[in-house]
Each structure stands twice: as C-alpha cells, then as structure tokens.
Figure 1 (tube, helix red, strand yellow):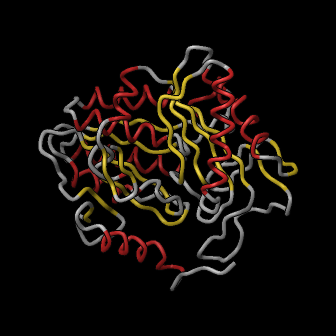
Figure 2: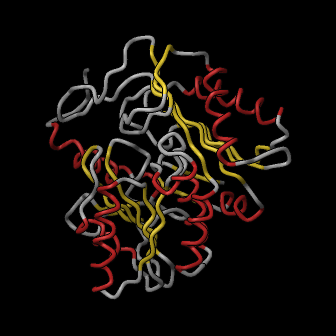
Length: 333
C-alpha cells in the first residue's frame, strides 16, 4: 500500500505539526510536546475543562474535537496507541480554569490505565477530575456487559453535549452527568470492507478477502460477530439498525440523532445511501430523526467501511447538540 509519508516514526508528530500550522486561531500546544493540543484560549477561567485522548489514526477522533463548545484539550498517542499519563496531565494543567476537569475518552485498556494514573497526578496538583468513558459499540459486548463495550464514533455525541454543558457554566459534576447520560443513550455498530495499513509497518492490520465484509468491526480492526459476502447498502443499514434500535429499546414516538460515519476510505455518496435507508426504516417505525450527521467523525486510517450511531433524544439532549461549537474539524450552527 502506497502512503504519503516521510519517516514512518515521525508520522504523528509531523501531521500534528501540520494541524497546528493550519489552525493557529483555534489550537495551540502548551509546551514543547506536540502530543498535547488545547483550544487557543485555554485555560478559560471558571469553566470546567474537558480533556480527551487516544491513539492517532482516527481523525477527527480525538484531536478533531478540541474547540469552543467541545473538548478543551487532547493527549495524542501513536497510531492505535494510548497517550502517556504525563501527556494527559500536561493537557489537564493547560485547560484547568479552576472549576475542575472532566476526562472523556473511549473504553480501551491503555487509555483507561493512563487516564487513571493522570487522575492521581492531577490530584497532587490540586486539580479535581471526574471521568466518563465512551462505550457505545454494541457489537463488542452484550447489553448486560455494556460497561465493557468499546468506545467508537458515538462518543462524538458526548463530546458535543458535555462541551456545551461546560460552555454554559455547568459544574464539574453536572458536566460529567451530561456525558454519562449521553453515553448511556448511545449505540453504534460498524462494518469493515478493507483493512488499515499501519504507517510503521506498511502492512495490513487484519486480513479480509475481496468480496467479504466484517460486521461489528472495531476502529482498530477488532473482529466483529460475522464475516460474509458484501451486501447491498440497504441490507447493511437494515442489519445495523435492527440491532441498534433493539439495544436502545426505542419504539414509535421516540426521537433520535443519527450519525452515519465513514471509516476513512468510504465515499460520501455511499454514506448518504446508508442514511437514506436509515431514514426509511426509522420513519416506518414511527421514530423521528431530529438531528443527523453524515461524514467522517471517527476513522481508522484508510479503512473502507462505515458505522451508524443512534442517540435517543429528549429536549435537553437536543438543545446541547444544537449549541454552538467550533473546531478545525467540526462546526455546529
């Protein structure tokens, strides 16, 4: 697989440098380590800070959600690897405005370990923290083990809502409660059509034969629950939606936000094919779409595939989604 890169070991630092050079009005790094980015006006006095983090290779997840009305800072790991606890602490200190800091990130072992270490380190610095962990991937664990699910594209809803709550002046406990409420009402499932190619090795992260797709795949190529022949867009949407609607327990009269997410190499036209069928299916069930997002929100380098996320809505959740937000990768009118 051909890639537009320089030295593979410099891949992350160089693309982060590119982001900083392209968007100085919105982002900055608080020190010499380009593995920490914060919003350009951080810290904001009296405001709860939100710090996220995770491995690279998923733009705009995670670093793409740093900005007004979203997260305040991000700690950046190598491709598909967690950031260090020291980097998380640096981001924490850089966004701390005196009202505490929420850690909001995906449910992966290395991230959990290092953010937990950073919690202890932040306490020694006199910074109060709380944690909310995205766990929306319904294919990764059954409902009774929802706490062990992976965090995937649906965490975008939590970034958006928690960021809006922090921006309006909510307390640390209130912002954390908003994040948990969104996480508990979000469900995601994805399909993969091709593997990713790791920059450091030039090799595929998993094997998938031509003409095959993996249903329930994770954003690092984690296996799903079924591998079989590639199906039509309508059939893919039906397979995913059947499980998502059942997992959330939504019925006629419910309201939802829909996210149709591309994994990195899926044409936007194909995502709109999926949304078309999603809209038809929900309408047939008497479920209203109050908000939709279609595009790349959580990728896996050049993986071909897509995921669908549903968030069960009420008036408060919708208001938070509709609140103003801005980052180099996300804009909400």
